[in-house]
Length: 256
Image 1: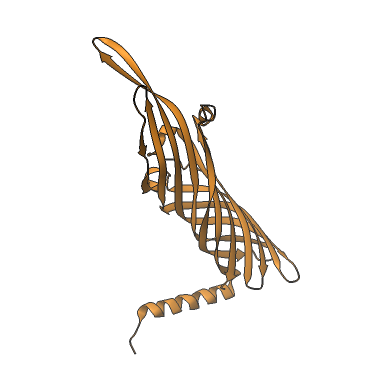
Image 2: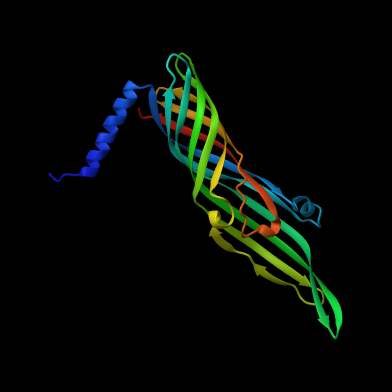
């Protein structure tokens, strides 16, 4: 029989973890679920676009996923507990843009200065996806009922973006006086954390859970506090602040 050191390490880790959780008031829960993420945006010219000949924008939520492990330690002789863990959380948002603006070209001819006024119309949609490794730190209270428990917890989270793609799709049309309009597409794909968002994020987190036997159903909300705007590719829109907003629901199973 061939010796497999990796399998032995896994067995030892499970044995040690189960013994620790049996002696200490610690439980470990695997979870999976869905995110509905949005973004809170502040931009210098947003209000100007809305009143500028049909210009404007809208932000749509995106549905993502989260997978992770929660570690909960009960505080002895009380109903309070401390909870942490690690989660892979997929977030993002869709940004719809419609802009009508003027372009001014100044040139000199025969020692005289002239200006050529053009119109630029942009219709575009950006799909921004971002995946984070996230660590929550929360304090909670456990209400024990006859057949199930209700847990309320709140605290903070820290996350770091590890993967993300942004796709832009749309057209830009330029109308020159005395010339036919011409159109170019702005279909591009680039890395979210290189060009759009900063990697680090932190904020507040609150969650309510219902436990039955080894299963739990949780609903929570994350309020991002960090300004994660980088916007190297779209700084023409003068975006000053982006903050994550995420609602999530997960199904968990108590492993230990």
